[in-house]
Length: 108
Image (cartoon, rainbow, N blue to C red):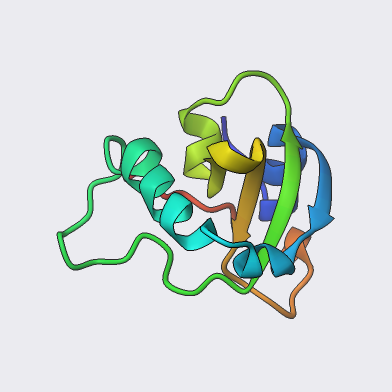
């Protein structure tokens, strides 16, 4: 599906969003985050071995997703943290309204 901007993309894929930057302080978050990156992203994303998927995540949102978890969610930077039973939206931009940001496309 084609989106005009990031806001439209995220509103299509999620139902609720709650800013949750403190998630990085949860014990075991980083280990599970990278495990989920390996399981969810790596089969779908064509990256070099030393390349990072996310360059810099500025904000983390706990989200409820619309529909089943698919490559479309992965493409938008939504990861599932199994131990917390949470979907996390990783936002790589800050200081600009989401309707002025281009949609993201992690699956190349």
